[in-house]
Length: 301
Image (cartoon, rainbow, N blue to C red; front, side, top):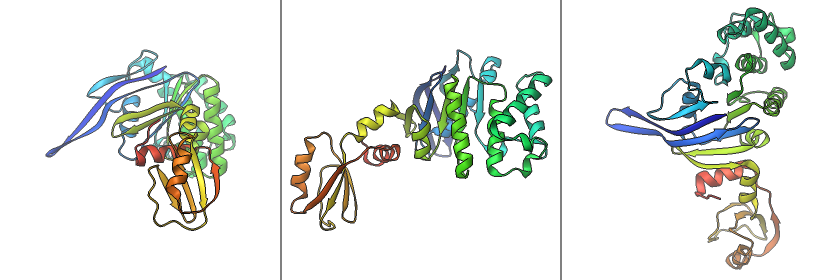
């Protein structure tokens, strides 16, 4: 479906060069939600701009079902929600915005209007079709932005921070729509700093660090690998002199530690002496924990 192959990009400024991308490669398959994660400056925005066609790589390529960015075949297959604040004309009504976008995407007027009304009904915008976009709440504006992105029924959808700033109800509705798109066979590429959103939606996780792909794994595999040996240990006294060889965090009397394997428990108890262990609990990993370990502890599965 969508393939990103060996993207390189260097930005040149006075007296220095910034290597934004250094060989980024991954794919998004039909019916799959892929979360593209990374800290600020990791290369997510540059990658997304290249996929949309707003920026050219120095080397490498992007293809969607064999079509290159900028081609008619590519633009008719791709939908993108990159900036909800700029995704619609503020003075046009909801319906006018959608009809305009449909015309830009090559839909005949009659089909464009029918598709617009259909999406308004699906996304809960039916009572806002004549309202100017500038009068919409943030949640309603996000729904309009999504409708604009998929008005032409693309096979691949890009979503950049789609739930940022939304209230719980609006975020839940948008997430449900994303899952529905994947179930219908669309390829979805999602970027977000909200790890709980990525965990709920993603089938696969790609983590960028320094313009490179550090991890590209199915979410379930990734969580299993990182969570297999993570423990919460409660000590009798708050430790002040711990010297552990394992990645860990300390909060008061509680220690969260990740071991390389089950045998590491024996070494952990030895290293905790003379602190008295009151309780030990094996934890399930979450994507936020995985991300922090990858970014700050340089731990890889």
